[in-house]
Length: 263
Image (tube, rainbow, N blue to C red; front, side, top):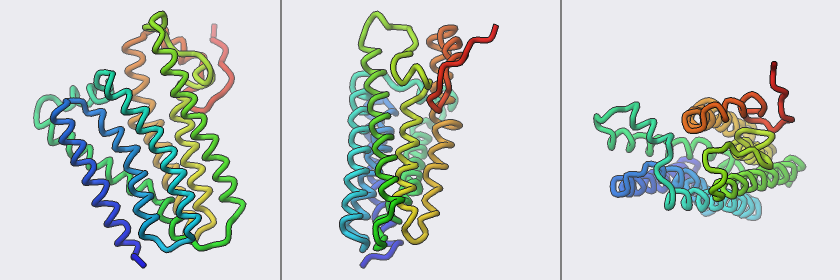
């Protein structure tokens, strides 16, 4: 039986080691967006570490490992495709410009390591679930359903946006098809739903209420920090008035009926 500290230590070594490797690739490619791939893969590495080291119910450990792998590997593959064929994400270009030219490589290293630590903190539900030997609960089944809705919605939103961008006739236009007609950031919304699902799965376990920290942190990151604010600034810069009109008629995060324009 491994202690919680041993499991956290092993996960820390795995995730930080991966982030260091990705930083080295960044030095070669000069595309900081590779850290996003590490963000997705980090959760997969952590959950399998917990599967191997924890002593909770084997089927519960296996199920959460499979669920996280489905979500994380799909997201990592989507991000890898974007990394290989697209220029550096404007978010990281903006960060670099804000930092200036002084010690950028070191600052990106610190950012990569910080994201690795965030992965460990946000992975708390996986640790709680992997340690649980409780009887199965209706909360867990509800969590599986919520997780499924989140993964399907996020994948569908990514597909719709990619399909929209592939058409040359849509260059410079704002995507307002499918889920993007009812939310300006449906991919972020459904990613948050995934973490709500993990919280529900963890809730019946001893100390399961602590898992609420994960969807709360994700909500802050997506809506206030590195998600919507930066994406909106870039969209306004690249699409101008067309995006301003989109902002007037479409919910920012939670899918909702289109708004009526004032005036």
